[in-house]
Amino acid sequence: MVCILVIDDDELVRTTLSRTLTAAGYEVIEACNGDVGLRKFQGGNVDLVITDILMPEKEGLQTIQELREADGNMRIIAISGGDRLGNKSYLGMAVALGADDALAKPYRRQELLAKIDAVLNA
Image (cartoon, rainbow, N blue to C red; front, side, top):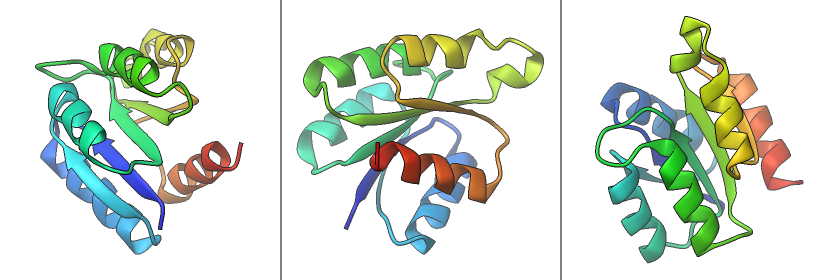
């Protein structure tokens, strides 16, 4: 079973993502920020990381860089609601720093699952 690590400081987003991914047949590990996410990444058999960009403790851009350093082949999808304000730079920077794809919040379930499938099968 494919294991996805979901890193997001918003508990509602994290829980919703977890339920969506579990219903789609994925195993899910949750983390509330980049520091916790990196610890869980080190301790688990993770196939894909979905990380928010704007978080306390350790934000998503730094988390993406550290994930890339730890495992250059790790699949990563960046998500952010910050782009709703018209600032497209967060998701663009995430891809430039090593995310395989990016998705602006809010997104539709099918859009998320299609991105996951594309990234895992790239």
